[in-house]
Image (cartoon, rainbow, N blue to C red):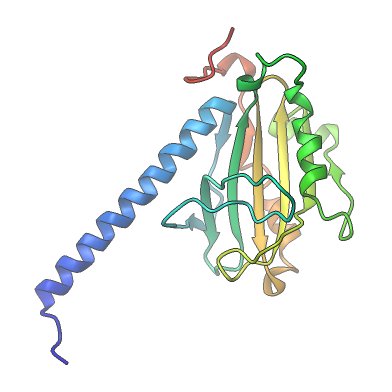
Length: 207
């Protein structure tokens, strides 16, 4: 078999790099826009890098509706994958009879596997650290293995009334199960709400 010339190999590498770089930039742009719409600030945790995907994956929840994971990061040992999604609450405020501020509880009850653990609601000190009004942690009831590697997941949802919800999905497996609770604690402040005075959505404007 004839080997490709070094120049051709270099050209192919550059093309692949540019395509992947555009994909990552598009994912980051979408991620940043959702941060704006929910008034959240993100600080990348140490030891994690962006996880490149060809298309946005859905949350592998067993029952009914599933959200899209808009951004993914992976730790250097590739044992833990973290995904993010968001709900800008303001988009629902104009619908009569709908209280979007109960979304956190409804989503948790819909997605949780309560045979593994009970829903854990954050205390006042924990809420203050992320400037949230409500927050909950639970085990996700998964129906498939994500990327053929991660078959377990813990979820944190945080909410600021009349502004938005932020979701963090911690995917792991048997190999990393003993580390996941410590990892959640170490990354607990990577996503937090900004002061309400800084809320300036681009799509879902204030009334």
